[in-house]
View 1: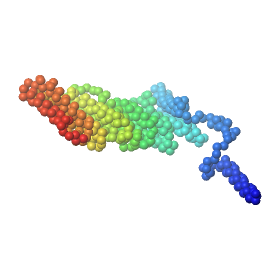
View 2 (view 1 turned 180 degrees about the vertical axis):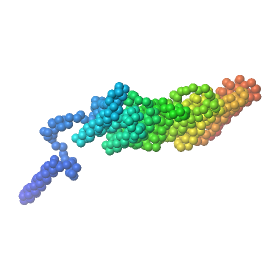
View 3 (view 1 turned 90 degrees about the vertical axis):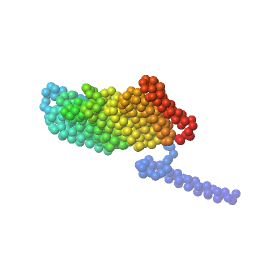
View 4 (view 1 turned 120 degrees about the horizontal axis):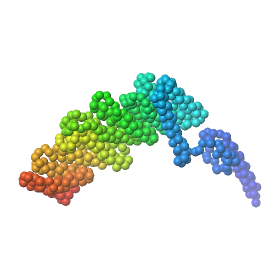
Length: 508
């Protein structure tokens, strides 16, 4: 029992220490309520019961939260985009109507448009100063879009100022918009201004068309947009760039300069220039998409080109060599852009790109030459096959195999065009059988040595085709020696192929 006083003293000391710690905890909680969260270096406090003021929290903000719903997306983005479109179109329609009816003077019309742009800019800056930065930025972007409409009306449409000066004004507006978008890092802000800048030349419905100025304006506006997007994942802006490329390519197609090849290829040249700008200035992941979209537009523009074709063969080639040359350049640019598609992306997209788009350019190159025959057509096909093989050296693995396969198939086609009518009918049939069989054997040999299954399989198909061609075509050969030789030649090649598949060790 003598230890009881000591135990009581120890218990009292413990209670006093706990009381002091509780006082310190209360003081820390009080400081936590009054100080900024960034300056308090305390561990997380236990959950506190809700206070009475939380019930009034919903009234503190009258703006609905961004919850990703359809209503919110339409309210925040769709409505503002439609407002920008209708206002820009309204400004253009007003100027066009005033021009058509001779109302007011040209300078007054332009001044009214400039005043509208100033009002939008002032309202935007005022909203930014009051804390509504997003909406204020959208108004500033709308003001810059209206500025582009006014500049286009004052220059190419009304002739009040030199066209180059109007383009300079539009460039300044585009630069200001890009700087603001980069400062705020806001895609929608940039997209509003870009959309307005791109539709500005098309909402002016009067005046003499100025295709050269339209091309210069579109090239500068799209190049500035491409430069601004860079490596950002601004897919809305990328979509506007693609749509703008298509629209301006169609819009400048009526250009006439008196130089036949320029007039013929002006739209395609515009789309090709956008592709080159994208390859130089754009960055992944947007770069291959913008470049390939521009090239697809270029290929379609060349494919849809129509005109009288009284000449064929060499005469047609000498009359329009620009078509074949530009188509070959477009195919090379396509292979360059396709190589920029990341390896992690779908391989089918890459394969479809390198298989379809150069073929569209090849069709555009062959169309003016007339029937698919003769050395001129064969030379064009050979150029495409050589391009595929050359670009295969830049790739590895399955991509190299696919490019080599495309080059090989075009090489086979080239041989068919060159040899079909090069000799007499009998000799041409014999040479073609030998050529198909030889191409098949070489393809199988290369596929085995390099371990490329697709090349080997295509070689086998060519060897079988050579035999089938010999069976069907050699029966019409009049010279018995060539007829028998065609059968024996195809059979000998097939025996060699069978030995590779059944007797020889697999190199792969």
